[in-house]
Amino acid sequence: MSENAHDLRTIIRRPQDCSEKTIKTFIEMVAAGGEADAHRVEHSLPYTDALIISMIGNTIVGVSALLRPRTSYLKHLFECAGEPRMCNPYSLESCWLSVPPEHRGKGIWQHNNAAKRVYIGNRPYHSVRRVENKNVADLSKENVYEHVGKDFYSPISKDKLRLMAANHDLVFDPKKTFVYM
Image (cartoon, rainbow, N blue to C red; front, side):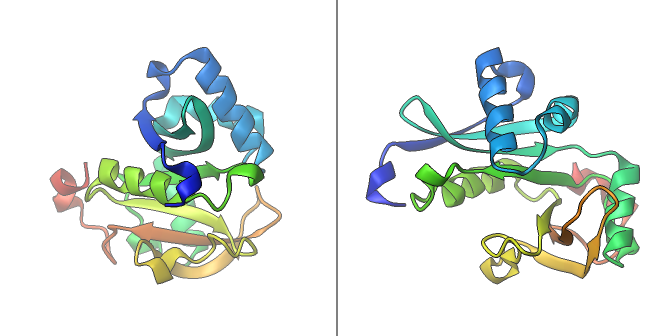
């Protein structure tokens, strides 16, 4: 972590445990970062397991979230990537990572990601990345995620996408439910 962010801290909260001001700042930061439109973030908040908020002092300097996506959406993602048997209906989606340009290079993403990984533990999770976003498109080299199948286009995105997964079995085994939850 950079010396500029010596008082960096990351908190993980359910949306219902956050103030309206925090929710508003979260939505604005995600929208400003181009990760999703504000209305899409607001609409998806009921499906959010946790908001991950990184702060320096009392200033929010980075955000991300963990969603509980619908099973039909998960099936669609893994089918698009060519790996439908790997789809785990208990997988959380790691998404909406946004760090404003003035706070980049301070170790915020690593701090946010480390807190997320502690929170998740051994549960399966995945992330959809834009292939052209070289900073986070291929996190398999960090031994965090595995690149799932092939890159693909989705009807809801103009960008080529890459599905990354962690703690997933090559073939989902429903008998292991107790491990997934």
